[in-house]
Length: 272
Image (cartoon, rainbow, N blue to C red):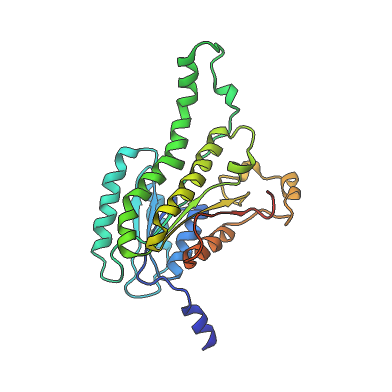
């Protein structure tokens, strides 16, 4: 009986959540744990086949629970309005809770490692060549990691304010504070999330809405495999690479908490 009482202390039945990048790695783990807490989860990704598989794998723990796949590439901002309107239409038809999105987890992200000077033209006087070479993949990184999360968040803010409930979480990176060779653009995109979330928290706090960043260190996902080696592991005080559950537990903690906002929580095993 005691165990059942503890379990009921934090459940999300009737709450509606979006998890971008929710088909793999950190995003999938968060989607899975939200589903296990009873939330209706919208899994947002850019690959339809992978999305369908992920949605089908999420547990249904009560009769009114529903999970939905959303396919949209975050680097294509011209598709966002249509996608967001479809989500709002679907969630408004739910008869099992808030009828609005109350939890928003921005986990989607892309990275690219390349020294900035190598992206530049050999002709240092040719601004257009330098601009175009930097622009090749930098726009995609900045749009996916920073601009689209900002636009998506903006689209759901009024709904959260009306609900008097909102939990917004951005998955950042310790690289935004540590810096790392070859990741100038990536670290800039993640650093932008820190500033946005901090300022946003001051705008929405009076409506019982929170905004926080989780900055993982090196986590065992396909995105980080190329960086993991024994030297790296030995540099981490806890002597291990993190796992997706480490990040998801932090996300659920922030969703449960109603007096933590504007924070950037590093989950890095003491690396930084």
